[in-house]
Image 1 (cartoon, helix red, strand yellow):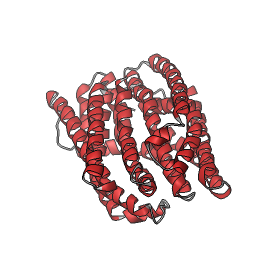
Image 2: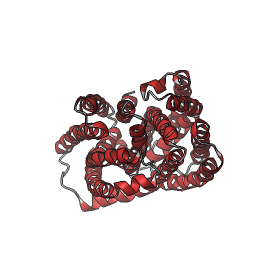
Image 3: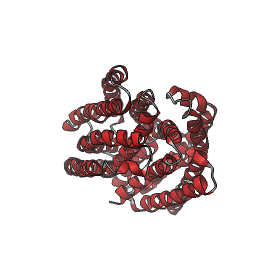
Image 4: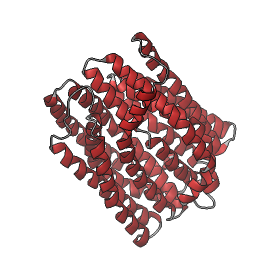
Length: 427
């Protein structure tokens, strides 16, 4: 439950941005759709900083070596800072090219560039948040990330309202507010990890071998995440070519999808920590039993969330936009997103279990296979589906059902075998 609270607090950043920016007009909301997809890709590529760290720290914690667990976490945080700075600089320089590549219209492009450029200074802090959260989850502490994430989400809403509407900074003000909130979160989490490291005499200076090892262990998850982000970027690019109304509606639907994905990921995060600890302690039976239980939780949660989304789909769009055409498109696409939630619950839990087991290489291969299966579906929508609401619905059928079912098959086949059940403090 604390993991659930922390995870749903994170997408509240983008939900707040979407709601506040949506009332600036359709073009700014469409611009946020493009910039948000690009920024999420930059952060998503490095999500291994949380996922790989959680599994690795949990294994060492389960094996009884707390000092090594904290050392692994400190190395991950240094890696996060080292990756965040150059990535932010590159994104700032190439912001116009990134926005153009994603198909933003002439009206939406300036808003997309403004949001992206003002958001990028906070990227290193976002990555440090990922790494520090991974450390604490691996140590079975999900309450501290909950407090920090909830506080950050609340501060983000206040800052955005003040900067966007109070000071009239527009879409740039929304990005600035999010950056300030992320900086505060990164500082708070880093202080907690540093205090733990000092208590156990863990060196705080970067260790070249440790940082390099953290990077190598995360490479398969980078490939896995890259395939997911490519699928999401392709989906956004197709929506962009269906017009600003479809793109604005897609931004709202994808934001709500992300919110629900983080909610379902609460069980997946538990899967990472529990699986890593069980395999670190050499308890295969516990890993198997916990996986079965978490799959039940994942599917049940997907049914509940899907039902709630379906029931609220006629009224949710009004929270994000006054445009009747955008509202209609959002409602129609949300029906598809709601039907996909039980499958998403299954997929996210198995993904978390295999990450906790350190099965990154298989996840990389499975990601490539599912992307190869999805691209023809997205291409078919681009070529054959009409624009507007109908095209957006078919796009979400391709992504929410086609792509997710492909993931369910590849992950389910792996979980049925024993190759992922490797025991010991390190894989």
